Structures are given as C-alpha cells and as structure tokens.
Length: 103
Figure 1 (cartoon, one colour):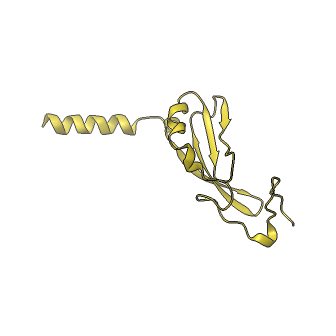
Figure 2 (cartoon, rainbow, N blue to C red):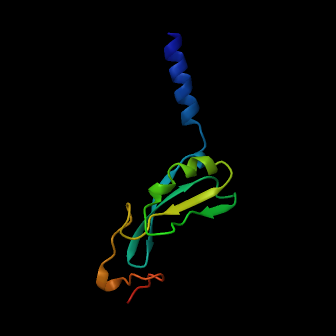
C-alpha cells in the first residue's frame, strides 16, 4: 500500500510541473514550408534560438534543451527537409542561405 501511495504522489508531482519546464513540439508555416521546432522554458526569460551550423534536425539539441530550459526560453527549429520539417517543393523553394521563395 505504501508503494502505491508513493507512485501516486510521484505522478501527482509530475502532473503539476509547470508547462514551462516541458519541451513543446510545434509547427510554424514559413512561406511555402511547414517548419517543425522544439520550444522549452519560460517565454518571459531570455530567448535562445538554437540554430544548426549545417542543415539538420532539432533532435541534435535533445540533450542540451533540458540543461538550459530552467534559465532560458529555447527555440530549436529543424531545417527544411530535415526532421519533421516539411520538404519544400523544389520549383517554389530556392535552396540557398536566404531560402527565399521564387513566388
């Protein structure tokens, strides 16, 4: 019986944690591309945009985000065609540093 109470108490604590201490998975439409990103931390705190040095998925920050999310608001996008970000339609998307639309 004590074990059941301990498990229940642990679950209640976990359920009452602030949403700011959890990683949120979101999408944002940017031009012709639906971009996936991970967001964590309190938006009232300083924001850090976790960008890649090369085209990649936001999954590369999966271990860093929990370390920083108590002190910062974090946003980590997955680049086009990587992770859960939509692969853009090539005739309507210029693969360049600007990534500008040809429309």
